[in-house]
Image (cartoon, rainbow, N blue to C red; front, top):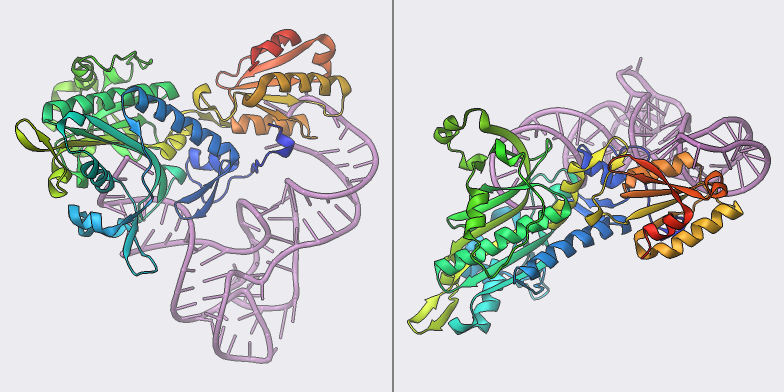
Length: 433
RNA sequence: CGGGGUGUAGCUCAGCCUGGUAGAGCGCUAGCUUUGGGAGCUAGAAGCCGGAGGUUCGAAUCCUCUCGCCCCGACCA
């Protein structure tokens, strides 16, 4: 992409409404613009990141055996009345009426819809297990939206739902999702600690939240020191094997959210206890028959009718974009991990109009394909460097007349700040598509 | 939902106390000079001062009501 033609409205000054780094930087880097409190438009640069995050989530869900569907944002109130949650959910649910005066709502989550989908289609135990997921916009009318996309009212979420014949099988589905989450976060370069969590209004008795530690995190969490130095590299997982030992290992050490604190146990930890703040980037639940019973999701089996065991598994996709920035930024701007960077490399022409410089840039630009953002604007070097640092592409390739004359270009690593010189030929190959 | 704050040019803000017809910096447009880390000079464009009522000869400024947005707290992917 050529920056001269790209819709990238960067801001030199910090918008007054943004308090935390990720919100500030997303506005300044031209990733998002606010439409109303807690509701945002995603601009091209931000959307590229959102899509990359969603793609990683999608790949890991598929790998774990989940199947993607797409349920609507607007749901009939009817199904929520069936589960009994229509009255429970309160003002967080955005309720609307259609032209026929029928009660509708903008979905805050999808347990009801997916249960209807399942129960109407599946009648035999032989079809189990099933894990269905979708990546869809949700709306929760938070009293106080804040922190940009980290706590918006409208947000993109991956939610998966498992259907099993008995609790043991449901536990296997839970474990699959658990490990899929570990892989998902690791691929993005995030250290997300699984914590014993409260089940809240969704109900059930087995639940974990995944938290990225950050000073700006909204929740207070308490973890064993060993998590801080854990090996966070991606794990190879055979999803057909018994995952329980791996899950046990990951949940063996103390890690809890505020509501689940065990003060007695904490006393035994001594110096090994770390109190920190966390950004919740995922939450998984096993809730048994809470919805299947109320909504009559039953399959036939040799032993007669069985009410299916269910679990649900959420990842805040849009929130992850904010969490990533909280984890990876400095005073100059964002420092994207390569897996989620909007572009892999930024090509900076230091002197537009210089024939040799232009020619070198054009060659590099064409060779790099879709993962290059080429700053071909007629701007001063300082402006280009500042914008490139701000938007945080992992690599900056700097092409200037002096370098071109000497047959070299400069390569800067945004994460480490390291700079090196490459011959033009090396440079051509370095990011070739 | 309680408490606090704030709406003036695209952005950051001054002006409001003490009413007299709209300002700065950045950004934007044009020209000249500059050109390896957010340039300089010149000339411009740009605001129903959030909205509605009121007081007044006259309101960004005073009063009333309203709406938006932000922050602190209680609640949540």
